[in-house]
Picture 1 (tube, rainbow, N blue to C red):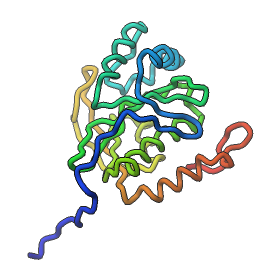
Picture 2 (picture 1 turned 45 degrees about the vertical axis):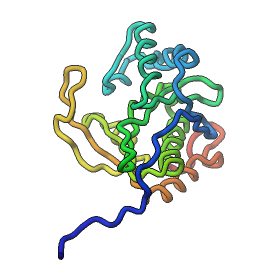
Picture 3 (picture 1 turned 180 degrees about the vertical axis):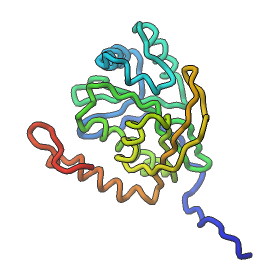
Picture 4 (picture 1 turned 30 degrees about the vertical axis):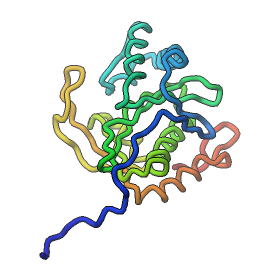
Length: 222
């Protein structure tokens, strides 16, 4: 009828929901959040952030007492959406967490969020590999069509990190949510399934051990 329409969906829908599985890489692994196993380690890792700046754009925290932080973690452990994973380094230390959330199996869309990476992950390949492992699970393990990243539009480091990882900036939803008594304009970014093969190759080149010198510095950027 002369009207433009989208191309046909080739993905079998709905897609399965993420499961509490282990995602293992060379520099780190992601495992289902377990407060007994990870709580004290996460508290110690996050406490390395002496300024508290890592909590600014999160809807929870900062916590002055470990007991209050562990109470939050117990609720997080029981949650199915967001689904929390703890990031473990090669020594088995809990160094951060991230989640899958706003799961939409009917449309094959899922978001990554509640990303809290401690200073122990900074300037190491752990943070990049953790994001790669989650992407790979979404696109290859679960077959989703769209992977989303949303953050406060004022959180420039988060937007820059998403773009570095291959997310495309799509725009800003004004006054989309409220947290900590503040208005939040939300920046939306995404990766599509058809973009994954090229991104995967880029990640694997960057994560290769040959890309790092003896001091752990990258030879080529992502």
